[in-house]
Every structure is written in structure tokens, then in C-alpha cells.
Length: 104
Ligand code: FES
Image (cartoon, rainbow, N blue to C red; front, side, top):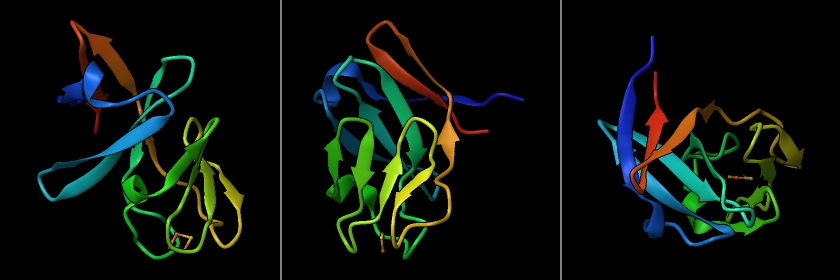
């Protein structure tokens, strides 16, 4: 079952960047790609639970600020050591300039 929640405004996220979004004790990361598409993942690195929102986005990769582990934020696949466990991803839709994510 879906559970869509309003995460932020479209303009809250710069292109080629991400923001942190906290909801009911959970942390997510919301990304806006250079093609202006939105994506969402868990907000914490799977290596040592560091906030990915403090990391760097390059193309479709988020680089963790702590040990530079990398993930493809579209699929959640780990793309660079020491990150080796996939990041959970969430469906996203944009409606009336709001970014909604399905956290179910
Ligand atoms: S905490 Fe993210 S790579 Fe180590």
C-alpha cells in the first residue's frame, strides 16, 4: 500500500543537489538531477549512518561526506567503497510544484 507524503517544494532543491527531509523519526534524502528529475532515498549512508545530505552530488551519484562511499541515487546501488550495501529508494511524484514521496 502506498503512503504518499509531501516532502518539500520543487524549488527547495537546487538542480544537481539534495536536501534532507525528516518525517516521524525517519530521515530521507530528496535529490534533483541535472535533467530536473526528482528522486528519494534513505537519508543515512548504509556504511555508518551519516547524513547523505551533507555529501556531494555528481551526475547521478551521491558521495557520502564521511568516507566518500558512493551510491547511484536513482537505483540506490552502491558504486564506491566502503559503501557496499544498497541504499533504499522511494517512488517520487511532482504535483503542483510539490515533491511527494511514497514512504510505505
Ligand atoms: S559513513 Fe558513508 S561511506 Fe562511511
